[in-house]
Amino acid sequence: MHIVHVDLPGRAYAIHIGAGLVNRAGALLAERCSAERATIITDDNVGPLYGDPLAESIELAGFEATILGVPAGDASKSLEIAGQLYDELADGRHARDEPIIALGGGMVGDLAGFVAATWHRGVPFVQVPTTLEADIDAAVGGKTALNHAVGKNLIGAFHQPVLVCTDIACLETLADRDYRAGLAESVKHAVVADAEFLAWQERNLDAILSRQPDVLAELIRRNCAIKAAIVASDERETSCAIVGRAALNFGHTIGHAIEAACGYELRHGEAVALGMMVEMDLAVRLSALGDVERRRVEELLARLQLPHQLPKGTDTADIVARLDADKKVTGGTPRFVLPAGLGEVRWSSPPSPDILDSLARVITP
Ligand code: GLY
Image (tube, rainbow, N blue to C red; front, top):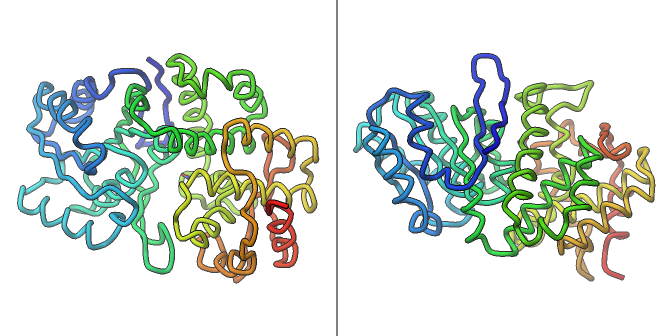
């Protein structure tokens, strides 16, 4: 088993990575929490697979466990579903020392995390992620969120978990498309922070795609280590002069707009892969990224079978218009984090014509 530490003063926690951790989550929780009860929040895809084994592990460790289910899908990240969960917590008299455990992918983690951040002004929170995207990104770093009609993740709070249990065996049941979509965040981490990790992914590509357990555990460990270091340096994304946590937004500024323009038909990671392509084009033209480096990342995305060209007929003006609704837009100008090489990023505020140009260059000829 691997352990990665997130070193935040007063809120440090460990990410445990290995096979079979759903069954050990209760024992790990008991080391950190003396409450008598715990509430598991999951969705109707993941609950039937791992809900009972997790509840059993929690009960064996001495807690009384309750499972609350929500419909699968991003539409559940809403005030309405959060309200239903508050009602259920109120019915069960969930006390302020009792943990809420998120069992699922990014949607469940964001929703359960938001409920944990706000119920009784914050109760202990545990992440048990079950998708690669959640393992390497969403479950680490304490961002919680609900969607608003105007945009995704516009309502939220920072609320760090007390424990993350990442069971790589859960990835065995993950659909291939979702697995590959998660790998986009791994490419992102390498591009923004660790050029050697990009080379590692290139070297281990076949083992990554075939989900070889040792390689998978190492992939998750390295991603968590990169993210933990970034979060520890700028937990709330408040750095202005240095890029800090905003480095993790590479590919996301355009990616979120692409996601919305495509009516949320793309997986998040697929939109991020396309967003990285557009933002790398901006970086080659406006920042210090070399064309050779851009082609290297493009080839890796292609070998991971992630989309790297926008479909013919994409409405680029619509994508630019949607940038305005993004949280990352300040003072009316979209501010991008662009690679200045592999493993290095800089701020940039490209004018709209440049963004349109880069979008056009990434459209299938
Ligand atoms: N997923 C980006 C972040 O956690 O900051």
